Structure formats: C-alpha cells, structure tokens
Image (cartoon, rainbow, N blue to C red; front, side, top):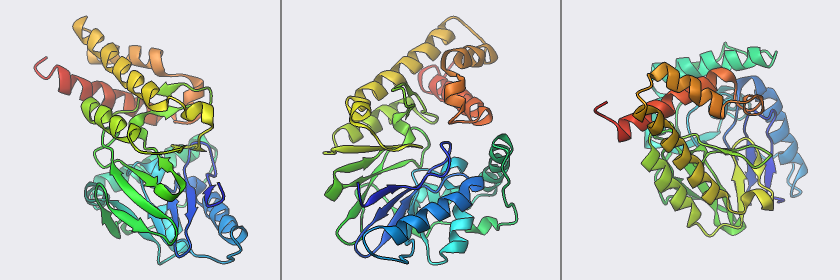
Length: 296
C-alpha cells in the first residue's frame, strides 16, 4: 500500500506512516531504544515515496499510552519540533501524570537492556503531552486521506483505533488482541472484558478491506479473514478460564502461574518482554474478577 508504510524498527516496537497530500502521520512510535531506527525509517519513507522529498512528520496518532507505543516520542519531537501528538482526553490526562511518565521511562530501560540496546534517558518528561484531543467519530484530514477516530477501550481506558476510509484501512488497537505470525490471537484486555467485547464488535462493523495489526502493520489476507471472530473467542475463552480458576478457589498467585502456563511462550515473549507480559497478565486477572466476581 503506497501511502501506508511500515516503519517499525524492531518487532517489539511500533510505527506505521501514512502520507496524505497535505500532511503526514505516524501511528504509534514504539520503543525508546528503537527511536533512531524508527526516525530513520520514517525519513527514508518521506524522502522516497510519492516524489515528495523532505516532507516533515506532522502528526503522531497513538493507540494508547503504553511505553512500547509511545516511548520514542521525545526523540521524534527533537527531530520534528512541530509534531502534533493526537490522543483522547483520557490519554492526554494520563500523559501529564508523574507515575505513567516514570513507568514509561523505567520500562523503556528494561526493554533496552533485554535487547542489549542503549536508550538515552536525558530527555524531558514534558515531551509527553498531547497537542490534539480527539473523541469517537472525529476526523482529521490529511489531504486526499482522512483519519477517523474510534474509541476502543478494553486494553486500556484510553485505547483508540483509526479508520482511513479512502484506503478502506482499519488500524486495529490491542483491545482486539495480539496476533502472532502463526495466526494465534492472544487476549490483551487489561481494564474491562465487556469494554473489549464492545470495542471488537464496533471494529467488526467498520467497512474495512485491510487491517493493520499492532506491532506488525498491514495484515495478510489470511490473517485478516475472520480476525474479529477469533478476537472475540480469545477474550471470551480468557474470561472463562479466569472465572473457572476463581470457582475452584485458587488464590491470585496460583491463578497467575496457571495463566502464564496457558498463555506464556517464547514466541510471545519475542514480541512482548516478560516484565510487560507478567504485568498485563495480572491486570487481566484482576479486571476480570472485578467485573464478574466483585464480592469474592
């Protein structure tokens, strides 16, 4: 797809570029330790496509505020000072808080160490601020292309997906799960099962022809076919697995161990570092019990 270009610098990272006639946009910017590679990939794409050398990067749309999706932001702002970060009101509020900023920094360092990479920690946390606030249904024109916002909470409360109607392209958030190259869909709801189901159903109704997956970019037809049905099954099976453990009166730590046995794998850890997987697993268990077994 000529106008939508994969600029991901590492498979655990993020970054897909959309080039409109008037403006350009990156969707998520990935890990801090991948920032140089991501920036170079974006610059190469901006120079080499559509006969328009030297285009700036105008927008960064983020699906949510986790470190592996937004960690490179300070370095993109250094490269393109006029870059505008687009997120929801909830996402904007999160980015102004000290704790999320600290967590982004800490997990960025952990991820760099696991990849035997270096990360520049001298950046200012003030780089993490929103410039454009969007809500469900808002449309930002890029010239010949437009970006429609879909609120898709479930992975986080601030999670967004994006639809490019002119390309029939739906940029899927992690609320719908994470699909590995072998077609396995892993559940990734962290804040609410019902929110995740509603978000998946919303995305399924969009008149898309192409899907762009988290950490992967444009999906092959075989992966896109029936994806949302697989996503619904993945989150439902996950909920039922957790509630079954709860029915058996397992304690939280045993639940976590069994969750790791069921969903953890070296294949998945190659995309999601262990620390992040473990944190997310505990969050999935906790939010499921809050939603379906609040008095236990």
